[in-house]
Every structure is written in structure tokens, then in C-alpha cells.
Length: 383
Ligand code: HEM
Image 1 (cartoon, protein in one colour):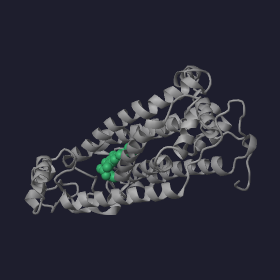
Image 2: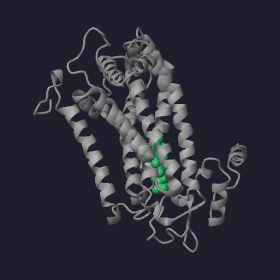
Image 3: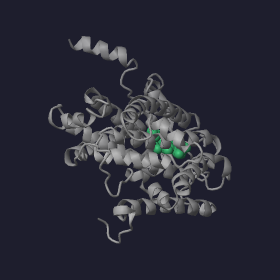
Image 4: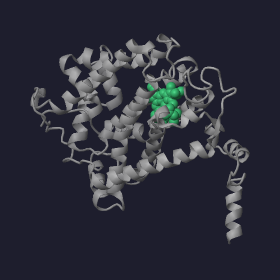
């Protein structure tokens, strides 16, 4: 029996357990998943400060969302007459239904936050310059897709929170001049959120957007490898002069073990959160009962706050210009000074501008979340 199990293991893992540097390089090169890593890497890339672990945590969360999402799909029915009841079934009938739903919900919120932190980290280190230009643009697409996935998933529970958050969000889209109404019609399949919108959001959320996201993630990771790993400062050992003469360490076990630890920590944290914090479920969606105020999901509340002043300038122009500006950034800012360092004095203006943008986004989001009451009136104390 033991020999039989051993022969199955050997058929999957052909190179044996790597016990020296040569064997570990062979192991990295002969496995599809490990092959995504370079066989050897710079020791500085292993330090927490090199990545803040944010890219890896984004990837782990994307995989956890896929696993929990598939389980939820087994029970979810994308129709207004049945969707909310499916949520109740998850809570009372389906084995591990509440735990899976909670984990899916908190992982989705965490992913929006951590992908943004990853983008900030890469920006701070100028990781969008030189050969990494295209990979940054792929990253901007991933950021947009993460938001779109979260937004389309928001509607699925079909409760008051979901219904009105998506109504507010799609009304913002309708403020696009000339094509706004057509655009809203395209995403909702109607003039308001209803049966067609639920089906469209379901297909986008469960099929189209994850497929596109994982395709781009594949490209993204491939590019990280082809671009020579993480960006390094010209002052770092071997930095700016390629890898020649600089000591590299094998990715197995140094990088792979660290990745396993991060994966375990993220999984344990998510499990603890899912056990401790209940995902909200309000009363079933009722198009005739508008909550006051009706709020978009938290990551769009900054945009909703701006849209309050001007539907077009705040709700459409500023977000579209921000997205376009981010995508064009590597082609506008091409100075090589300070690359690979977080706070180089050569980049003070660029970093101050980016910090101002982030601060603006944070302040508008906090105001929209905590300090807006009925009729979107400003409250001086959070509710
Ligand atoms: C689903 C979302 C994402 C995943 C799974 C992901 C994954 C990763 C991983 C694992 C790395 C290598 C380790 C690290 O730097 O942390 C990386 C690097 C990189 N990412 Fe992402 N990423 C995502 C989104 C983004 C976004 C939103 C941006 C920017 C707009 C971005 C731009 C980059 C760039 C330019 C690098 C190379 C950085 C360097 O050379 O230092 N990524 N990504």
C-alpha cells in the first residue's frame, strides 16, 4: 500500500524532495506552478519590506474567493423570487453555509483594500517604470476588475442593502454624457435594477469577470518573472547592473516556504473573521421602499460623495480621469532616479501628488460613509 501511494506521489512529483541547491533549482523548473517563480532570487526580495506581501495576499484572496464562490453557486438561484431565500437557506439549511458566505464576503472586502495597498507599494517603489510599464497597466486592469467583481457580487443577496447600493451605483453610471442611459441599460438590461440586472450581474460575477481576472493575473505573474523579479534600487547589491556577481538564493525553500506561511496566515485570519463576524443580510429587496440615505458600497462612497456635488464631474469625470491617469502613468513619468526606493528625495513631488490623491479618496470615503445622513445631509457626529 505504502509503495503504491509512493508511486502515485512520484508520478506527480518526479524530482524527489529537493535536498540541495541543484535539486531545488531542478524542482522549480520542472513544476508548472513553481515554474512561475524564477529558480533563484535576490535575498532582498525575500524581505517583508520588498513587497509588504500585498501581491501574494491578493492572489491568495482571489483563490479563496473562487473556492468559496463555487460552493455558494451550488445553492444560489439568480432570480428575484429566490435569491434572498437562497441566502436564508445558506444560513439555516446548507452545511457550512454561513461560514462560507461570511468568508466570501470578508475576503471580497479585504481584496479591494489589499489590491489598493499593493498598487500603493508598487507606486512608491516606482515599480511601473522601464520594462514594467505594461505590467503596471495590467495591474490597473486588475484593480478595476477587483472593484467590478465586488460591485457585481454586492447585488446577489438581493436584500435592501444590495438593491439600493447597486441602484445608486448604476445611477452614477447613467450620468455619463450622451451614452449614460444606454450604458445603464446595457448593465441593468432595463431602466432599473430588476430580474435582468440580477441575471447579468450573476453571469458577470461568477463567469466573465473571474475568467478575465485570472487570465490577466497569469500574464501579470509571468511578466514579474520576465522583468527580472521585483524592481531593485540602483544602490542595492547587484541593483541596476543585472544579477552578475551578486549572490542569489534558491527560490525553494526560501521563497516557497514564505509563500506557504503567508497563505496559512491569511487562511487562518479569514477563518477567524468568518467565525466571528456575520455578513449582513437586511430585509428582502423592495423597490417601493427607498432607504434614506441610499448608499453605494463603501469603496464607491467617495465617488458618491463627489457625485452629490456634480453627477457628471464628481461621479464620472473624476473617477474616469483617475483611472486613465493611472494607466498612462508609466508613459508620463519615465525618470529613472529613485527607482526601487520607497521615499527617495528625487521623487518628492511625485509622491506628494500621489499621497494627496489617496488622502482625497480617503477623506471623501470617510465623509460618505460616516458623516452623511438622511437626504445626504452632513452630520457632525458619525451615526
Ligand atoms: C488581483 C490583483 C493582483 C495580484 C494577484 C497581483 C500579484 C502580484 C504579485 C504576486 C507580484 C510580485 C510580488 C509583489 O510585488 O507583491 C506583483 C508585482 C507587481 N504588481 Fe501586482 N497584483 C495585482 C494587482 C496589481 C495592481 C492593482 C497593480 C498596479 C496598478 C499591480 C502592479 C504590479 C507591478 C508593476 C508589479 C512588479 C513590481 C516590482 O517589480 O516591484 N498589481 N503583483
